[in-house]
Image (cartoon, rainbow, N blue to C red; front, side):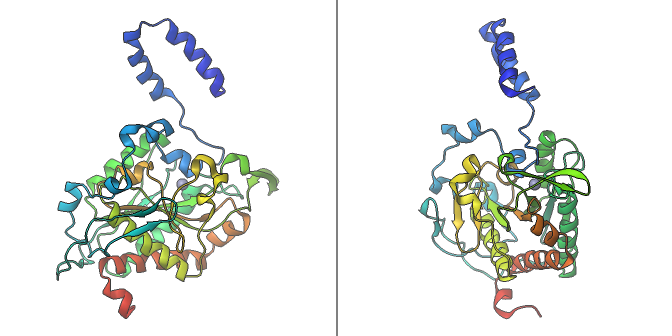
Length: 340
Ligand SMILES: [Zn+2]
């Protein structure tokens, strides 16, 4: 059923109810509404709350308010490394003031043996996310890369690293994912995804005799944070480290998210050098109790980049970059002396 038809039928049903019952009807309808999934199961469609909710005045915090960590986050900063001082320039929003840095101390670095990072495998076996140009599910790419990152981190001594696999359909799995992440009492969360494009950009081609879709228009990784995460400042710091490592690995970030052509999927570019964006509405970033970052490792709807993402060489660059970012996050001195 097309959406306009759906709402016309809905209007007829609602007209039969008295006003006091409308709230009940509205709640029931919201629960039954299909999540807005594009053909490609593109991540931003799957992971945001409704645009209405995102734009409501209640949620429209100022940038300054949004940068203040919540009390609970400040309390749970036991393993966090010292923050970098002062202001960050938002490419799209102008400068924002970050809270003052915590004083540096001997305990500011973390112990890899106890530091817990959760690697959230994007999507589920049931709702597999985007479909690549060669008809491979995004979930397959996400799981393979997340397992390699886990392996690298454990080899570096981060024994508490956890892979978070979620089951079920898209919408309920979102909330289960966040609840499971919060129950793990992690110090950091990295959600791992692979990118696609909005439906309108898809082109047709045939792969192995099957009608398929692709878009070679965009490529590259992107790193997202939410200014509504209870610890945005720490999230941003980790995001910057991940993006910096990927860039130094010779990769380029996806620039399209800062462009008007993306419509409602256009997002503020927080760092135009490395490719860190804010995406405030993403549930997995704003509802998690710990600092959280989402990585779109590369585009699998782009035919060349899909092949690259399928190669051990590219996966090693990304997994190695993430592991280096975690080490540097945990101990900024690592960046100065390099690996042992
Ligand atoms: Zn995804």
